[in-house]
Amino acid sequence: MPSIKENIDIINSNIQSACERSGRKREDVLFLVVSKTIDVERIKEATACGMTSLGENKVQEIMDKYEPMGKDIKWHLIGHLQTNKVKYIIDKVEMIHSVESVKLAEEINKRAAAKNIMANVLVEVNIANEESKFGIKPEDCEKFIQEISLFPNIIIKGLMTVAPIVDKAEKNRKYFRQMRELMVDINSKNVHNVNMTELSMGMTGDYEVAIEEGATIVRIGTGVFGERVYPNKNLL
Ligand SMILES: *Cc1c(COP(=O)(O)O)cnc(C)c1O
Image 1 (cartoon, rainbow, N blue to C red):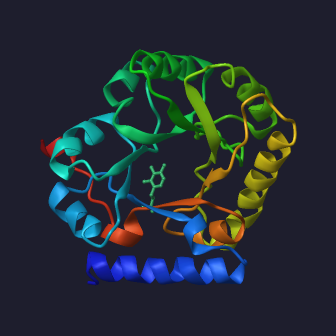
Image 2: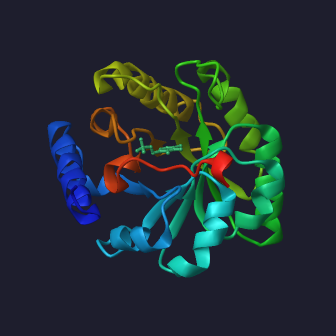
Image 3: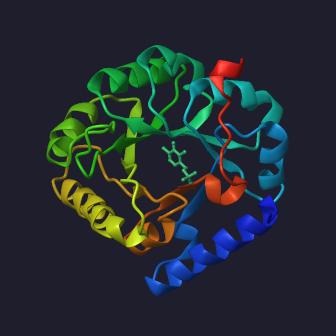
């Protein structure tokens, strides 16, 4: 089995190639290591390779790992966020990728204001209109962004999507392209205070295609750490 370092090296070289193919600069793409379910000891193997931006999908995991991982980490909350948990992480995360209701945006704004900070957020888009997925429908995005742009302590940095699970990455190309078009389109509407630059899209199976279509943040877990092992609740 390849080591975490070997996996990171491979992914970095694939990212480099995808940037070259699409005429993009390597520094315009953030390789976000998704550390959900992974213990601190193994995450530290990744951070020792210079990977200091980590993505988690649960508030509890960020809280548990925050102290042990130390101050140099930039945490990204990438999973569904419940309104009542915003207060625990508002001053711990670099960016919240999963804003998809006005109520949640309102709470983020309120908690950021109380700490006198600005919260960087992405709007989660359900680009393929999947029943099972969180996120704003593409056609509702402009109106949603107009609404949440009024919150003074939120900065809308861009859009995020969790693309469909597919057997071939190419099948998601059209969705990644639509995400980019959606961002360009909304930017052209000159919504007050909104100039989005970030596209968080692409995971282990499809990050290269996502980069070719304009991703600025790719979120990669399995490719770094191998298959995740979820604790079997029946055994606990
Ligand atoms: C788990 C997760 C990822 C990483 O998925 P991999 O296929 O393991 O790379 C990316 N984004 C979100 C929102 C996730 O929950």
